[in-house]
Image (cartoon, rainbow, N blue to C red; front, side, top):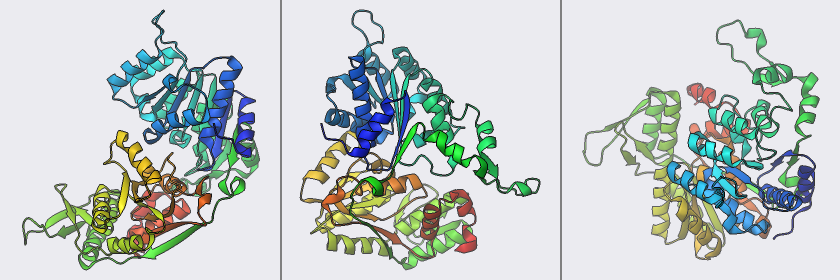
Length: 482
């Protein structure tokens, strides 16, 4: 069991003083270990293992079991990770918690499952029958939408659990209103009630209300100055906020933007797609018969533009065409050749074709690498992580921000290169925190490098991530600025 940091000890003490608590700890400051210690103390107070349910993103459910083993004395045989298909998951869960004598679902255990499992009615019914005493919602910002069916199901489920803990480093991603549903899950509506519209009316106002009766009115809700202090006081009666810079002596995070150009064919494809929603790419199989690359919606158009600047295009039949002249991959090669002799590097990218392209480059350069993305099975990802962390010849981790950006520790890397990005602020922040967190003190600095093609959708993505703007609106107005 590792010794806790001072802020973690404070967090444990605050959480134990009340039934429900939220750890709004910045990524990399140890909110998982803090939560496990709260659970450990609750079990000690009750003199037994309690019924504990952890709900987390699928990519980190297995990590929770590892953390329990590291930060508690709970027997690993009392912990079940539910990541199987629906029917198998239900069967395994029931067998795991069933009392041999009464045949009821009543055994005290630690169950770890993913958010998507709450869309499985039979599984949710079995969880209710079992009756967890402690509910933990990891990355609780995934419950931020008051309109989400899954969030409503979890809120209803949480009302029947005595002790609840929320964990997230980003409780507010788009608007301060994101907090409503999370607190609704935490305390059953004690803080802000159960009605979102009443909550919004009391604590927020539409800055564009003067145009409400005019065509094209777009509401912009901001906190009311008169109730803002009360709003914050209510939140922090049941939550603790911790920022990395305040509690950890981390090396500086250095950000670099490296400009890349587009190849001749790449630029033509990009311009055609930007201007007309339609572009043609030469087919390798059918010389002289170009294939159409089509986008019928603005959001699809943005996706096609991102794909083109990263080095490939998808035609109307779904076939992938690799763009032969791709300066971006050449710039990546230059950086990898410079860095890997003295540093481990994470290369982040969004698309499957990017993983293949980058992997082929690393094989050609004879650079050892591991992978953590959608093409790697859940079971194999742990092996890939171990290789990157422990094998001195494994110099690069090829990862996707969605799969590898949550809950894993990659502090062995002193550099991260963002080959391609998307509009998700959450994924961007999470990815940055994988190697700039507790443990990264082993480096003098941690460097993030963004490959940017100026005058393209790369600029739009940077603007959205920097300003937390509405991605859809930005995409729709993209033509005016590019």
